[in-house]
Amino acid sequence: MNLTISDMRELFLGQENPKQQNNDSDYEIGKPHNIMTVLGWYKGILTKETPKTLTLENCSWVSESGRFSEYVNDDSVVKEEEPFAEKTKVIIERTSIIGAFQIPKITRKLK
Image (tube, rainbow, N blue to C red):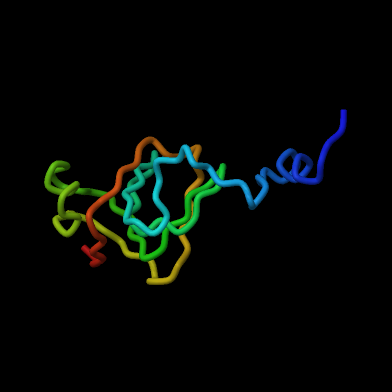
């Protein structure tokens, strides 16, 4: 069995070849997303996607959204929200994700 350096990198470090792109992804880099995890929701701008993680910036942790149908269209109606510092990179393990969707825009306010 012959392994390339890229094969070994992926096998041992969990990294794909950086030149490869996942064209099958439904996530859009640079767009606002709401990521639902087992411990709460995160809303922010998706800046990076890897096979194991998603990275958000300008992010908030949402513990209570209020009415879901209202929140999906206007995230400012959120009931409880804890913003991270503006340029903080929030890295979310994909194994904790239970759902995700794009939102029209990001508002950040401590509530």
